Length: 415
Image (cartoon, rainbow, N blue to C red; front, side, top):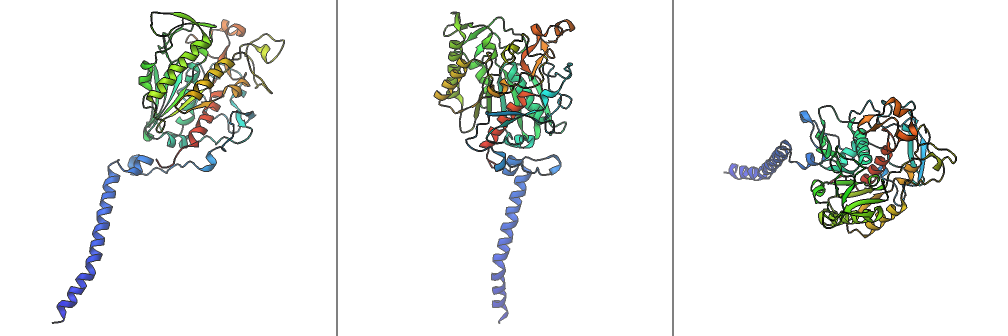
């Protein structure tokens, strides 16, 4: 008579335990099913490696960020042949002949071994894995002319070595070039738009600076390729500066007029700013604007009494220097447009730090009209030296180190 109550009490005691076990098993099953599906938030944040192995998460630490209030554009070039260059011509298959100065015969390599050091703080050490983690599931696009293309190639070379073969790809789809890091679902891209707004020079390969016609209020065709891009880096300067006047339209495309370059530049940037306000989501997207890349066309500017180009220069300029190739009116126009913009645009003022680098240009060791210089052309550097474009590895790597530092500043480890 006493057995049944005792059994009932045991069943009542075991029931919560059994229920808890079922809940644990059910939860575990849901978690495992989620992990198997690639929809797991864990995989969305950290990704999945082939073979079921987990990626080690890469976190942005406090020491990866420079101190608030530090002007990273004020500083000096420091000789550093230990940590520089960040890559080599041989290690990066994505460089074009225009930038591979060593391969093209340049006898010295000193230009590769200078590191930009801000006065008031330190830039974070460039870590390609951290950059890829910041860019996971995102697109980074450089927009501009061939100088901007050099910065794009620099960034690709700075990250590509940590990505295994078969996990990266490179595609040329004019006017774009696209590098993809497959496991990170990330891309680094370039878009040819030398004036930012539309022009007759928008073909990626068939264009000339001699005939310029710019549509100052037209940008929609370009803008379609920029929509939804997570990080946009704009640049436009050299193509504007060929002559003081430029043919352009504003309104009717049949009404071609000569504009002062600074007036035309201002109208073009106003068109660009309006496009930003209509198309950019500041919560999801970041926009950067690169200041002008300086030229070093005349040696008398840094060495009075001489009459050469930037050819055969092996060391940076010391002390204060600002060349005539960098237009202060253009700088002010950019500053005014960005101040008035309703979209937050980060201005990367790389002009002054690059002014010191008379030694970093391709000179006679680059391309002219798509071909390497002939022996006869190389014998006349005053006429044929390219003092606009930069050798790689070189100065644009420092621009990207600064861009990297800004990308780390506001990065959230958990999205």
